[in-house]
Image (tube, rainbow over all chains, first blue to last red; front, side, top):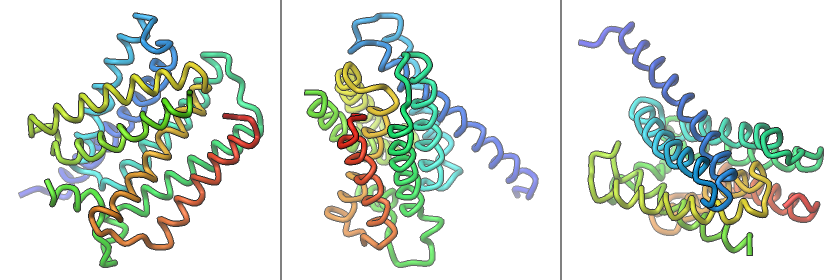
Length: 137
Length: 106
């Protein structure tokens, strides 16, 4: 039997893994940009490593965390982080107009992922995509 | 060309999402390979697009429009209902992308 404490520990661990996946996703976006279409070998190698890490960590965390909520957090952190660190790292300044529309896009995608959450939509008759995809596979 | 590259990357990212869902934590070899191959090609086209787009802008447009595509595909192919919440999310994402384009940010 799993005690409540064990369940909490497992959930906490899953969230830590998810946050790491989000950090790796930022690293992925930045290194793909830095690779200059995979002509800069150091950045390209880093991009491949981050690609595998973000995919693996995300999938591990989603075994415990609800798919919609997990994707929302991951995509939100990934997008905000890429915009902020990309601006500094590559000297691509964020103008107020750019920052505003990026915020709109990121809010939209986080909202969309949450709307696709099996957990949050449990009361409705809606079949969440993740489950529909699984059922088909 | 950068919008075309980004568009191809978006289509492949949708394939990644479907493959990764079916790979079930990478326990199914064929779906795992499909995930890695589509992810690799998506990444390459994203990198081509990011030669022109700022990283933060290109990445946000890529991941958000792929999410819209996944929801639309879920409606068309898996009979999911497209409620007002999802429609609102889609409208906000598209509004943001169009706003970036019209304001010269992308």
